[in-house]
Amino acid sequence: MAGDPPPVDPGELTFLSLDTRTPYVADFPGEDGGKTAHYMLRWLATTGEKGPWSETASATIGA
Image 1 (cartoon, rainbow, N blue to C red):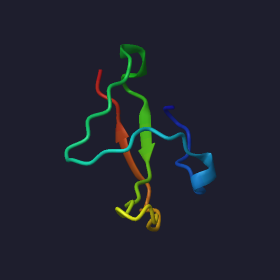
Image 2: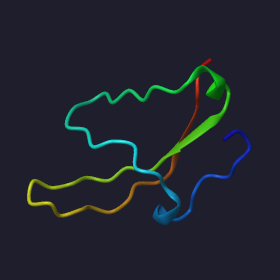
Image 3: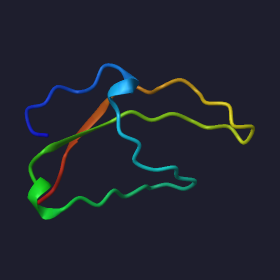
Image 4: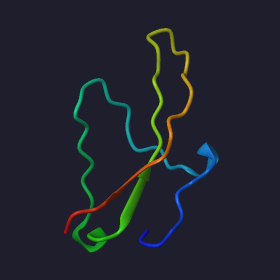
């Protein structure tokens, strides 16, 4: 949400998607335009082993 601070703990996150190709495109409803989305990413190995979390990336949702 606009003005919300970025998450500092992965426990604050909501799972968005598991993706095998780039780019990943997230669709948001029109009323979210102008709000800020915060993302944390991590790799998942073919063995199922999870990598470390990335730095937080933030972007403004387009209208």
